[in-house]
Image (cartoon, rainbow, N blue to C red; front, side, top):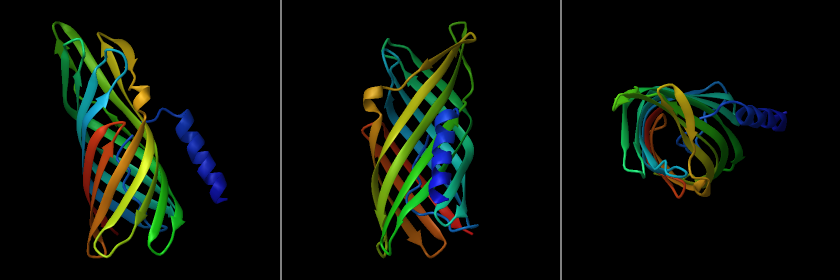
Length: 226
């Protein structure tokens, strides 16, 4: 049953229009338990193909995770974000902050007394305000998604984790209604994840995470378990 649900979730993510995110770490809610948090996610650099340049984005989210089973959690988020695109041809586009959101899931694949491992799918979609540039209307959507595999270890004061991910972050760009998907650099799709949970008692914890190789990004969230 567990294997069948996992296969169905992966197939759903592959065939649907999907988007990406920080990995949340290896701490999952138990069955019927809820985690909530506030997260700040800074994408400092993500290279695009051809002469599309690179992206930056600052995103702020309210997080909600629900334990469907002890080994499966559904993750939701909603908030705000912007997009900054530096074009190698010399033009920069700065889209001001507006709505964003995402969803995903995590599956616990190892739950030892100290050692934990989690497989996850996460995504984000950011829809900033359109901008007028020299008489043309420019609109952009950040289409960011990933699969990740993380391993962590519970210490007394920290719960560090490390892992790898496969990710995409595309810029969907409209100029006067003409749509074009500016894809992320396919040679930089595999990345490294390093993070830790810092507990403040049994119910509160701070999550800090860095992302490297595929993108340069950092995330921090303050979380509470109900």
